[in-house]
Length: 463
Image (cartoon, rainbow, N blue to C red):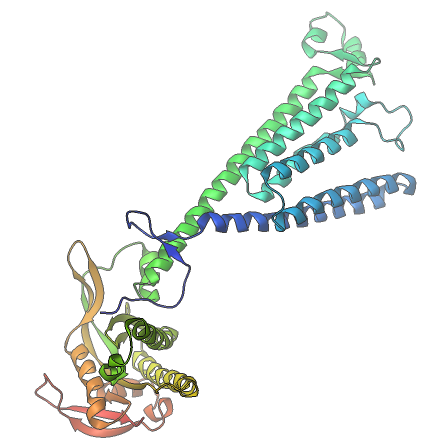
C-alpha cells in the first residue's frame, strides 16, 4: 500500500525518537514573526507621533509647536533606523536594546529639562510633577507590540533608570529643596507650612519618584506577563496547526476537521448511505515494468495527487491508496443529500485532470495515462476498525465491493467510467440529471459482478 500523503502542507519533522511530528522551523517561524512585529511597532510609532503632532499644532503657538514638531520628527527617525536594521537582519537583541535605551534616555531628558519656549520661571523641579511622565509609561506599553518579553522588561528597566537619573540630576541642582513626606509630616508644621514646603517650585519629594518607579515596574510586570502568555498561546496554536497538518497527510482533511473540532474520536460504527468511488491507472503493471523505483513513486504521487485534489474539492473523504488505486467516499462523516452528485462531479473532474496531465506528458514525449473509475451508492458500515493501538476510519460493506468491481469492469467494457443505477437513482432525487453532470453517460443494461448473485444495472462513459 502506498503511504497516504495529501496536498503539500507545512514541512514537518519528527523527534529523535520518531515521536509525534512537530512543525519544522518553529523557532525560525517565530523569528520571522518577530521581524514582522517590528513593522507593527513602526506603524504604532508613526500613528502615535502623528496624533501628538496634530495635538501640538492645534493647541500651541507656532514658536512652541515648531520645537515640539522637530522633536517628534527626531523620534520618528530614531524609530525607522532600528526597524530597517531588524527587517534586513543587521540588528541583534543587543543593538535593539541600545536603541531602546537611547529612546528612554531621550524621552526622560525632554521630560526633565524645561522647554526653552515654555513659561518663564518654569523649573526642572516642576517638570517632575508634570503629567509628561506618563509618556514613559506609554513607551513601555509600546514595547508590547514587539511580543518579546525580554524587550518589554528591558524597556521598563531603561525607563526606570533614565527617569531616575533625571530625578537625581534635578535633586543635585543647588536650588533644589529635597524633602521626604515622612519628615515633613513629623515636623509638627501647620497645614499652611506643609503646603508651602510641598508646593515650593523648587521642592522635590521622595514619594513622587517612589510612586513613579513603582508605576513603571507594575506596568512592565503586567505587560511582560501578558506578552509571555500571548507567545505561549501562539506557540501552542502553531504546534497544534503543525500536528493538524501532519494528520492531514495521513487522514482526509474533512476527517481531521471533525476530530479537531469535536476533540473526540468517532463513536461506534453506524450504517448510513454513502457514495463510493474507486479509480486506478489502467495498465499500471506494464508501466511499472518500464520505470525504476524513484520514477515509479514519482508517477504514483503525481497521479494520486491530481485525483485527491479533485476529491477534496468535491468534499470527498480519501479513504486509502491501494497500489495505483484510490478509494474515496462521499457522505462521511455525515451523509448529505447530494453525495451521489458530488461523486459523479468528482469522476468528471478526475477525467478532466488526467486529460490535462496527458497533454503535458505527450508534449514531453511520455506515454499518456489511462483511467478507470467505478462509482456505487448504498448503505455501508462507517466507523473505526482496528485495535486499541491503531484505528482506521473507513467504510465496509457490499457497496464498497460493488464499487471496486465496477471499476474493474471498465477494462472489460473499454470505458473510462462505470456507475451503478443506484447512483443515478439517488442523483435524480436531487432533481439532477446524469447527462448534465457527465455528458455522454448512458445506460448499459445489467452486468454480472463478481461476488454478487444478481446482476447490477450500470451506466458507462466512453473514454
